[in-house]
Length: 146
Image 1 (cartoon, rainbow, N blue to C red):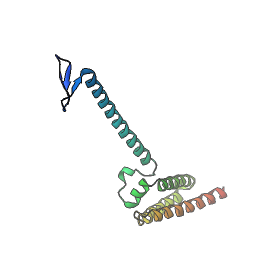
Image 2 (image 1 turned 90 degrees about the horizontal axis):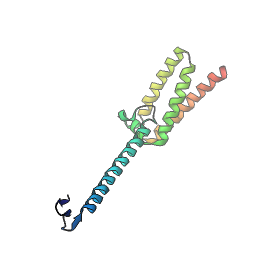
Image 3 (image 1 turned 120 degrees about the horizontal axis):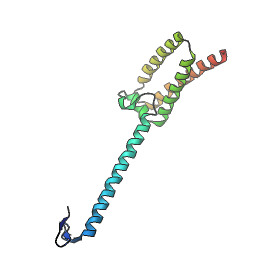
Image 4 (image 1 turned 30 degrees about the vertical axis):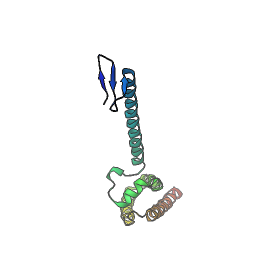
């Protein structure tokens, strides 16, 4: 800390050197700038993390299983997850209620099979690509039948 003497308007640093009031103000200003910079950096890191959380079809804050954590930390897997979720929603909206219930069950099976991959990135990626192909084919059948 900088000690100042109000009567002389001068203090001493810990090393004993003189510190004028102007220099003390500059040091406080520099410390404030450093604190603001650290706060901004923390905000940007948090903002980046939030953006990443929103990239998946599930909330990464609650990712507990190895496959989920891998998806949350890998941008490609996150995009595949979003693509699959988008296709799933489009297909679900086009299906009759009974077929929608069947699709929901199939999606549960997919998640179970994906979880068997653990944190193995290649396995997770392949499971997504396979499921996306299946849903794409189903969308094609529905669109072709219209």
